[in-house]
Structures are given as structure tokens and as C-alpha cells.
Image 1 (cartoon, helix red, strand yellow):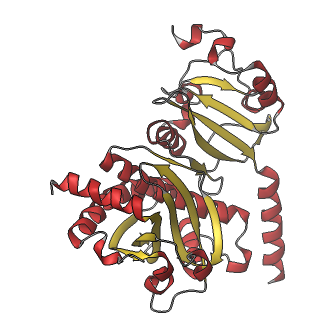
Image 2 (cartoon, rainbow over the protein chains, first blue to last red):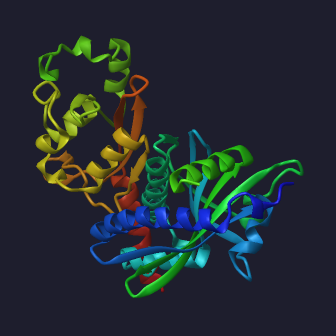
Length: 204
Length: 150
């Protein structure tokens, strides 16, 4: 297994975080128009971890199950982009956006579709930022709603060398702060390409 | 050649596929790289009351002025320029398109916007529209029953 700390250094992660924050601005503007209230999105933390370590990196007490949205992308680099919330946070998000007070067990098809759309707006903003930065096109599949066991979602075979670019995201909406995570699961080759592109952009 | 002068057979849509699309129980709209209408199926004509023939080559927001500065137009831009698909839910975007079940009854719908590779560099996009009126009605009824019982 490769050491994750060698793959992207702090300067590269900072640069990537800044660029993704610009994309978040566009996503926040789009969400604000849609829900007719101010939405702020920021990426305060970005790091790279081995896929199997993601559950312990999300939180001190990681949730058993997570809700979210997945988009598989292909291009010069490829992988899975996911927006994840604990079940409770996803409910807070739906309630903040829709103004409904729906118990979790009643989260219906329509609310799942609303979460899928919110995730789609945010993941598209991240993917188009990456595409813009690197002047590459990334093709993506249709977003999929997921509600899965966190450990199983990031489980790997023993020889798997996949890494995860992990972004902690903060949503500020209707006076509520809701934390979610964006993860990009990519193989070593894709991460190495990103590293090279950031160096090229920074003139290193 | 301006697109509205083209014949349907020049639009690259095989007649058999067109027949299949016209038989679908959901809406399909196909736009070119400049977001001009190439095709929509019978379902869209039926629920919008606009004919395909009189609108081919028009931008979607000219056909449906209600679309100005909406999520649907941003999604079309994402599909054509970034090759990214979008999902537009009825819950967050009530009535993105002016579609009707009957004269006085709006058709609740969800939309998917899907990039379509046309040539190596050029992407078109497909808008898939599904009628969710029955699901909306069912969920509202169930929620009302639950509220009465609590």
C-alpha cells in the first residue's frame, strides 16, 4: 500500500481546495436561487486518505449509515464522486431546503430526489471545476441516490490501491450549519495525474 | 444550412429510433450543441400543445420563455459544455416546463439532462421527462393520513 501523505503535499491540497471553493460558489448561487434563500458552501478541510481509512476520518464517531449521491466520472482521470451525509444531517438538509419537518422514516421518493439534485449540483460544480482547472473533459454518469453502510461503502480488497480525496463541506442554510463530505475515490494513476496537473498549474 | 431548413431525415435520427421514441410513455427532447431543438417525441407535443415541426431549430427558452435563467438551462449548459448530466426534481423545481395533463391540470414532472456524444468534440443533449403526478398525489395522501393519525 502506498503512503497517502506522499501523494499530494500541503501546497497542492491547498491549491486544489481553493479551486474547488470557487466551484462551490457557483453551486451555492444555483442552490440559493432554487430554494429562494441564501446558501453558503465552503470546503474548510481537504485531505487525501487511503480508501479503507475513510470511515474513521469522517468523524470522531463515524455514523453507521450514510445517505448521499454518487456520480461515476471518466476522462483523463476517473473514479467515483460522492456527496455524503449522516442520515440525521441529510434529514436536516432536506428540512432546511424544503421547510418540511419530515421524520427520517418518512423520507419518501420525492425527498430522495431532492437530495439527489442537491448532490448533483455540488458534484457537477466540483467536476466542472476540475475540468476547467486541467482543461480536460470529464464525462459523468447520471447521479444515483445511496443509503449505505459507511464501512461497506469504502471497503476494499487487500490489493486495492485506491485513494480518496476527502473534502469536508460546510452548508450554511436557513441559519443552520450542516456538515457533509465530498469524496473522490480514484486509483493511484488518476491521483498522480492530478498531482502533475497541479504542479503544472503552479509552475512547479 | 440553418437547422430549421433541414429535413427531419438530415437530423441524424434513424426513422426506426424516431418511431420508438414516439411510442415512449415519457418525454424526450434532443438539443444540438447550440441548445437548439433537433427533436422531441410525441409525448412532448401532446403535453405541451406545441408541434415539433414548427419549433425545430429554435432555442428551448424561445419555445418556452418560462425557462429563462432557470436550473434547466444551467443543466443544458453543463451537459453541452462540461458533458455532465443533471437531475431536476419536482420537489425543488415545481413545473420546470409548462406541461399539462389536460387543459387545466399541470403535469408534475422530474427531468434528467443527459449529454450525448455527437462527434469527438461535439456534444448534444437529451432531456428525459417523467410524469410524477401519480407519485406526488400518493405521497401527499399518505402524508395527510399520517398527520391525521398523529
